[in-house]
Amino acid sequence: MLRTHTCGELRSSNKDNTVTLCGWVDSYRDHGGTVFVDLRDRYGLTQVVFGPTGEDALTPIAKTLRGEDVIKVTGVVAPRPDGTVNPKLQTGEIEVHAQQLEILNKCNKAPFFPTQMDLPGEDLRLKHRYIDLRRPEMQQTLLLRSRIIKGMRDYFDENNFIDVETPILGRSTPEGARDYLVPSRIHAGKFFALPQSPQLYKQILMMAGYDRYVQVARCFRDEDLRADRQPEFTQLDMEMSFVEMDDIVGMIDGLVAKLAKDILGIDVPTPLPRMTYDEAMERFGHDAPDLRYGMELIDCTDLAAEAEFRVFKMVSESGGRVRGINAKQGGEKYSRRDIDKLTDYVIQDFGAKGMAWFKVDADGKLNSTIAKNFSDDLLAKIAERMGAEPGDLLLFSADEWDVTCRVLNGLRRRLAAEMKLYNPNDMNFSWVVEFPMFEFDSEANRWVAMHHPFTAPRPQDVALLDSDPAKARAIAYDLVINGSEAGGGTIRIHDSNVQKKVFNLLGMDEASAQERFGFLLDALQLGAPPHGGIALGIDRFVMLFGKLDSIRDCIAFPKTQKATDMMTGAPGEVDQKQLRELHVRSVKPHE
Image 1 (spheres, one colour):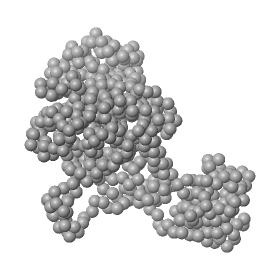
Image 2: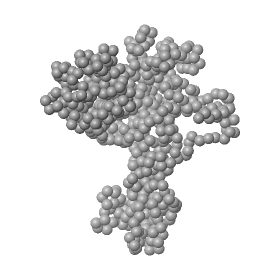
Image 3: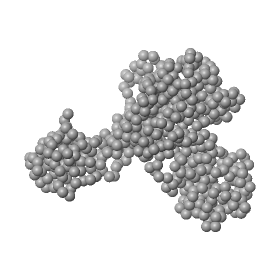
């Protein structure tokens, strides 16, 4: 090794030891005859002194050092002089008096420095990711990621799971997003697909008798991106045989409690609370509700039908919903201009046609530009239904049910952040269960799977697959952390007849199903046990545990929102020779 110690290792107990350190110049201070350098590696900082107490010949060389130069220093550990101890550093009681200096590499014109206060834009940071990754914050995040993954692996190892790797090159199957395709050189005109998940392979492992499978799996989805989504991502994939939903959920409850204790130092009571999908949508307007605060949705459709306010009356009479939220004491915080901004927000972002509102005055009465369309008695009923108190702000959405969900969920989250209704350091864990089996795609005029095509219906709902698929509920469960879906799983179909029926509902005839999933249908008829599992988003876990705003900040080499790698320039063009070998021709679309 070039070094004897790391830059975060030395203490007072190392006094008078001769040591060798390697690292990056974090900062330097030239005090005339003495040069002070803070030397940095991922373990910490150590102050190195070049000058009268060391080798005088080194001082001129030390004066040439600049930020991010890579150096090797040998010297003697000494206590810092009185009054210069730095209690913020673990190495703050000592310094190293240099006796030898070797410049391993000079840093020429760095586009930015990892310790500067005003960081550049994300594009520049991603282009020079190797510098960005030197930032202590990034290093702590990747250390957190490593600890979380190790904690997951240790937990499942203790619970008798076997870690099995599944293929990266597989067959294209419909799982809700576009596949990344890989052309085959050997089989002209045919393609592999990168896995959106190891779903089918882990089900096959259950049928092969490996009743407890786990894997830290790389997955790929060619879909529209946002702050918490990447084209390639990592998930903790788990599957169990001879189980029911409670067994899977209970296993993950234990994992969550372990990680919360080991990583965050908090005790999480188990079992984690659960609510059904229907309850979540009715109370919060979203299937991953943030339970760190209240502000639940309240239905006023029956009261709206009594109003002379045209919008409320039309919506209630046409089968729509009139629902609202109460922003406690929001009447004082939000001016009329602020409310107009909230209205523009729900129109532009969630497809609302508008937003109705009332402020609650000191006498408990509701005031608004639309108040004249309501009798005093009706306003009093609305106030009572909404739990209104002086100073509150009541906001309403009148529209189709799904629109009111989107609008009020968006308002609820925005208002909670602006009004600081929760401690950002708090962590809330819960489950949402019993999702619908299907959603109807009006454009394609067919049913699509809410989770994936291999999800089992509740036993009491199997008959609904023939009579009323919209009412069928799945044995499905999502883990929710602070209003974000952190994982999702289901009990799988292990009856080939039920699987064929689901394929048929999804618009897949018997021939197509056999061509695409024949191996699965065959396996289901050759001794398939009841089984189920879950996938936890590791990137999402790290983002939430680390209190980060984007998963790009917890992935070493992420893609941008345009699915590009700013550092390497991927994706890039390839030689025509490579395309010919793959039997592929690239045709650029017309402008």
